[in-house]
Length: 246
Length: 246
DNA sequence: AGGCCGTCTTAACATAGGTTAACCTGTTCC
DNA sequence: GGAACAGGTTAACCTATGTTAAGACGGCCT
Image (cartoon, rainbow over all chains, first blue to last red):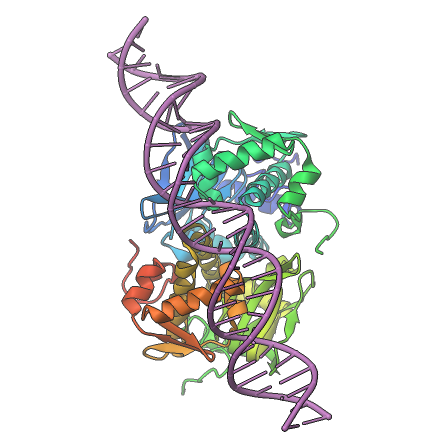
């Protein structure tokens, strides 16, 4: 039997524990996706308060989870291809945040009915799906740490470092950078600063030869410095390879 | 058959979706706890990097999840009785943070082996356990929002409001306050400020008649003002009762 | 071409919060 | 009783960041 290539879900947990899935289970996962949709303009895919009966897996592009307050938009999570963006809605049912596409995006939908079937008959696949939501929580914790510990320079550096690693897991990071279709305003929404201050920080990191963010492209000029400024330690991403938690 | 009273796990998801468990499932959960331990002094129960094969449920007292960096301690989550503190370790296996007792604490331990058995034979209980880890993630997101959106006054107000609601779920909040065995230093670690500034904020909220935090006791003087200052909306806690997501 | 619009950029000024350094209180322990 | 200690309190000073305002650049529509 030849292996399938899983066009919709091959990036799910790639570089993390994808290999804990058998080929059979990868096939089941791929077949869970019942519907595919594409958005070219920024689009609110799901809104806070929505009661949902299906979950969204990100196939191409980026998605932000946003909570709006007092007329401001706060980004509480960012997603890259392969992420099961709102798998948590399977158990929570209603959303506590908006799900918004960034740039051009392709998503797949999985009904909660079929996830229930998985839970009843596929304990290993179930554990892996659970695991993927726990990775999200680990990233949330690191964002909390980032916000409690770092100044604006560090936060932006940390964000760049994290995204580079996550895109690298799924084979989408270049040697020295990656595409990032976020405006400075959106970067500031993800770092808890104003866009004006984010502009200062972007310039500062560029001028100090650490990272250049412009025209939708992040170019890492000095990775060691970037990870130093962002106090970055990738262990919370639970990547494959040797255990390395300090 | 008389109902059991579940001395170890009766607070698990109390006030949230505990009633989605049958009496049989509540019994299974209670019997999962194989060992109980008590700490009277502050104690590091688990350390970042530990590879674990059991998870900890909090029976009495409070627990903090802490990440230490540059000689500082950052609190990324707080737990109250009934919380399955590190259920996420079941799938993640290694911890990305320390688990530390606050004040006098009683915990129970559940082996991952028995959790695997649950996953294989109890789909509904499995979904509820999964659900409980997703509530943690929802609280993480709210903390991210809190840190991105609010100044120090708001952060402390938000923390008080959240803890009051969570303790209320499990029947441990008084009409106007609750016991909180955290020092001002620890409050500051949870709010991303210095302890000196936390002192200023504690005083300010006391003097403005909103909340009084002293001698291990939080007294809410004006709940409406507290929730206004902390921009608090309890919907992310997914409490029982009518859906109310704005 | 001209005008509109979102994004980026910069400057001047205001303020929340960090830093350092003291001192004060209550408690424990000998 | 007094020393040692942890926690709380306050003050003076400094810096990162927010606020307001304005202009520059590029893309897109008519």
